[in-house]
Image (cartoon, rainbow, N blue to C red; front, side, top):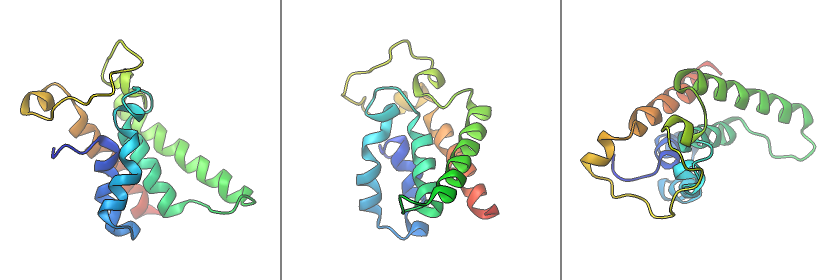
Length: 137
């Protein structure tokens, strides 16, 4: 509710646990809001959830075939949980938008803006999904 995008809100909530400073977390997650730069593709909360999963459980070697497979399975499981709750992992579908691409200009974050967007609840739900996953794994 401070004006961070959905990805930043999810990643920022876990920055300390992931061992990264808040500013770095905000910078590397800044491109993914609005369904990736307001393209209205994959929901920013989902992207944030995936980033947290990658930093916490991901692999780093290009030869890590087993780890890659396990991680993709993890990502698909997280996506399914999110989709079950929200009907999709795609921003424009969740927000019921007609356009596939929005202007690059974000709207001012006012009380009216948040009344018309379920994003705060969606972010909280994504954070809860990844938090539960971390606790169980």
